[in-house]
Amino acid sequence: MIVEQIWTGNAYRNFNYLIVCPESGEALAIDPLAHELCLATAKARGWTVTQVLNTHEHHDHTGGNAAMVAATGARVLAHANARNAIPGLDRGLAAGDLIKVGRTVELEVLDTPGHTMSHVCLRSHTDIPALFCGDTLFNAGAGNCHHGGHPAELYATFANQLARLPDNTLVYPGHDYIANNLGFTLDREPDNARAAVLLADVKTQDPAAALVSTMALEKEINTFFRLHSPSVIRRLREAFPDLPEQPDPRTVFLKLRELRNNW
Ligand SMILES: [Zn+2]
Ligand SMILES: [Zn+2]
Image (cartoon, rainbow, N blue to C red; front, side, top):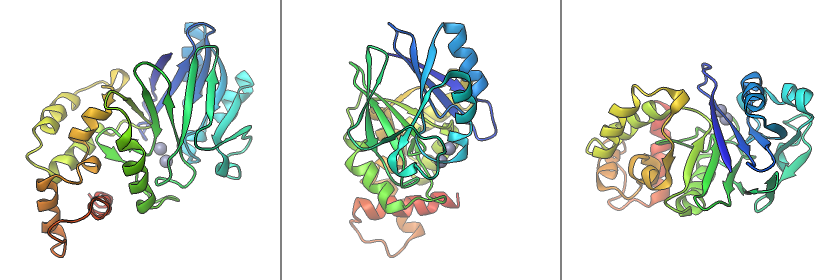
């Protein structure tokens, strides 16, 4: 499996992706808003885009669909419940569905509500697994729930699905927000040395050659996986004095999500 991460350079800081079968050159384009860039990359490498996958229905993820389909005839795939929100949907997806790309690539659909209620992530069946997580999980952060989502569902997705992925899973999010998110991590957990070192590194990084994190790294630097950290809980109590002595992880997650909304 070849993964091409495409930095759009737009104001939303989107990443688009091409997932390619190295034997056949067939490609699946994830959220190809920058359709011209995706098509130019495919052409230069001799790849053929046969499928478009939207992680969810927001325009900064679906806005390139029509042009991609017009140029390639690709089939459009997204969560089955996004049928009314995404024109031209060819294949509605549900948890456990398998998406094949060419002869060698197999991707498993995860149903991951929270950012919106019809959001999918893809997990590759490869020796080193990869997760394409749209706006559910960001490097050092979590998606917001302002436009059709629910924080409690997002917590359930994090706790029951994402946190259980193998530590070596590569994380490919829908936006480059890492520097800002690490700032939030350090605001919530000032003694997180790993986050401080990483922030110094990524502040000057070229998003076109971005760090690819792993679930192991996310568990160290992403506040939304650090729900048992004593210093996270101690800091949270400063903002929410009524917080119990041993708050449950769901409560911690929801309070963190609330604080992040105004940070
Ligand atoms: Zn979104
Ligand atoms: Zn987005």
